[in-house]
Image (tube, rainbow, N blue to C red; front, side):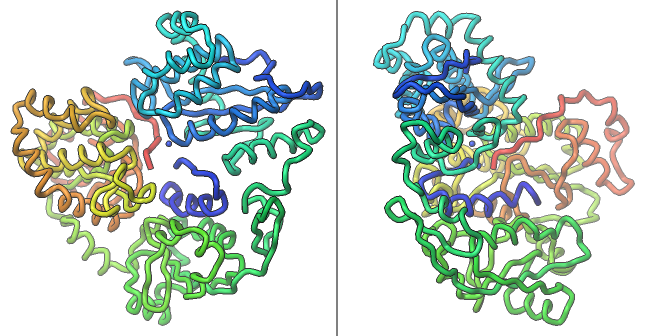
Length: 564
């Protein structure tokens, strides 16, 4: 439930950080920092940024900190590192080889000249899809020694810098881009230049650049000054008003433990809606049963706000927050996908939903449903680990590849979405198109061909070129590319809608999310782990292949990360 609750937490952050956007997507300095502005002779502020060179949230903070370094660099010890890893196959990063090379060339530039390197990085960020190939003109415009950068980038030094940088990010526990620290303190505030400057001035208030910093840069600066008022930043000054009073009814089961923990959602709600009071209702009480019937509640905990919620500052100031709610009679209910609610209100409802998903408990043929994004590296690793299990059990179990699909992602525009914003994918429209093509392969040719196609696409194409790359892959595997294209055109949206409906039914929000017989799997992400779990679902009639689970050739257990 903890990973699924992030959607609502992000809604809060998007509200209070009106000039910022959250994800979620260098060389060891010599303590001189990037210089500029007046000379400062006090103790420097240590700033550490951990990013991915093609992550838009990472490039956002690089662009925002760059002008601050020009004016306050004499008071700052700034270090930029990158998030990734290395295994027997080489370096790996969330957005693939182009991002790895982008990380490397930027580290090389930082190694040559830190101040000019930041100019190069900001220049490259103007065309993020061109990273790393746009490095040379950007290096030239920044006045960098291009040949020195090239020698590092194309030689062993670049690899060593990248290896060191990844290690620093790992040591810092940085998994999301960006992860930021100011003097060792985790920073989660607004991500604009003025907010970064204000944060630095908290540590060095005597710096000349701090003299004219306003009381507030965004509403969040005012909201954080008081817990019982609504604070708004007006022309650099905070203005406060009383919040709208409203009531929240929480339908839950006090006996279901951690699965029904309401602490986080209530905490976030109290920050969003400062005039809120709450009322807890037990699911098996008479009032609870009436609520289930009246509002069509499927899962708990369920959070129902009265209509006053639409009069609040939070509601009026953030249209995207409104997408986390659905109208239910005289209430506004938080979506289950926003809160991470997974427990069905009763067994009858659970049975109906399993039937809707095509799951029949006790039919002797266990079912594994694995939800991925076609270009999420964690999802790709899960596919590769499940593939040998499919080879062992394809005659005895049902394997259903499915896809993680959002609605209104990043505003629902065509860069990420189809169907008027109802069908979206995290890594862009080409990933969503590839999801659909893989659905078509599964529908037209079966799961065995799906595995071959998906594995080959993972190797040969990326989320940036899948639309132009897939056909050669399909033809190379002997698949009918024309049939796939026709299916994508005529049936694709409907296939994606069906997967989106299943996402909503089972509260799927991250890649990979795996269910065995309708129950979410949280074991080892390895072939042995998936094989053992599926074999355990046969209820005593497991095939002979299950006798040798411990001896099967196993993939290494994958990291417990996820996209989403």
